[in-house]
Image 1 (tube, rainbow, N blue to C red):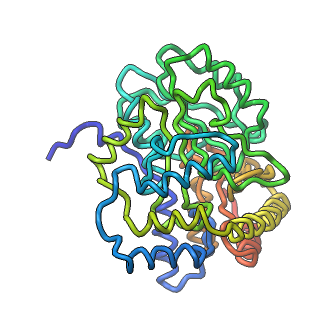
Image 2: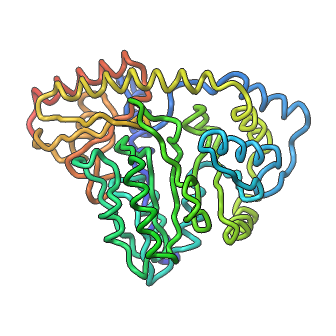
Image 3: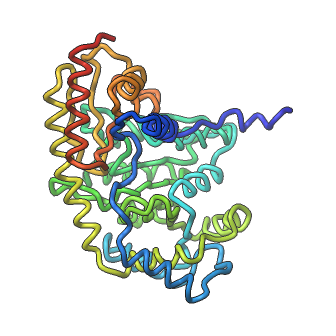
Length: 391
């Protein structure tokens, strides 16, 4: 049976394949420490869970507006004002079944043969997958270790042409943990004036996870690009709600109706009780969020110190998210082979750098969304494995 050729271009997120293999090995009795999957190891706070239960008991069992219930869209707008000191229209907010959906929508809107879409590399693998699906040309924006894994405004702008229809940015970043400073973002925004037809998708899903006093600068803070800016954010990481499948996006006036129509065609609306849980998350106490980030900070220090103590590995200190992206070039291993060997032979799940882009060779990604005890055990296993193995 012949399928449409575009579907042959769809990639995937290998972290889920690693998760499946790690789960299989664990079910067979192997002691597996999973530093591969990017999800908090915390439980969703109780008041959020209770809000969903109450919504079910109160009879919220039916369809909602395609863009989400009004109180939740209003709460998103209020939260953006509180965190970024920007005003936004709740009518421009779309509630989505996860953060990836915003990527899908934005890339689908702008991608077609003959145009370019720029994306971070290394970066979240779904960016390139969806770009290739649309037939657009994927143009990787290098995210370099020597730049502390922040994007370079100069290099990004040098890759833009009159064919550029969408620029995807991500800070704090997956997989590197890099955070781009305000000065670099300001230079980028200034340079974007030369490319008025290029829309911008700003993936800020880790916006509340920064460390060492590093400031998260939202692209929403720049009114000169608000008329072509799409914001991606959500609840999965911040509130330990990955399995709830909840995200939100903010769209400019000229795109919001297109986003609404895509929602109607694709998923009708987001799970109603989950939306009430999301409302409780934004309007309720934030103590659990702050406690989780503090714990991630402590684990981050353990990971960086431990990795830098292993022969052949160096690791920049990540300033955001909950990932470390160590350089393994001096070990002599290729990244994906090392990741596979660590899982199969040492019982540690990590992700090879090439799974995040063509520039990922020589690196692996570790998620420190696991207990400090498990992280220390994993680091010891990696050290022992590398000391006794050759590539």
